[in-house]
Image (cartoon, one colour):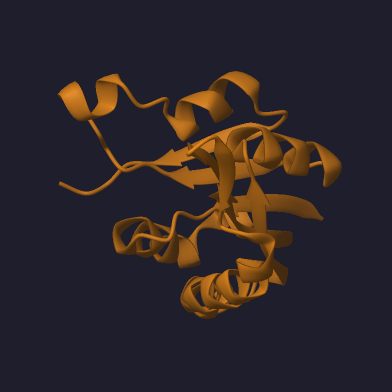
Length: 148
């Protein structure tokens, strides 16, 4: 059985792109891992560090995220060739590295990521998550581009 990981951003455009995969043959005889990773930010204010989100907020954020991801899972469950689903939410100061480690830990066969399609100045200064996966993923990468 294959392990396929869907890296989900919680924006509507990315979620809709992932839902469109419901009839894809990519999922034949597979376990689908639907994951999202929040970036934990460290701020310094008045010489005292501040971390956001704080650990006491993790359960609330995780529950809300899983509720959002449930819409994608429900749509993908229309494909009878998918054997099982796992939905996970992670918190990390380095989401890219966390996802890479997760891919290695489950011996993923494929990772699917929906891009936001930033170009020009918007895309110039941001380090693309999809670009990172192409360079460092231990498995094949399938990139979904936004519709125009």
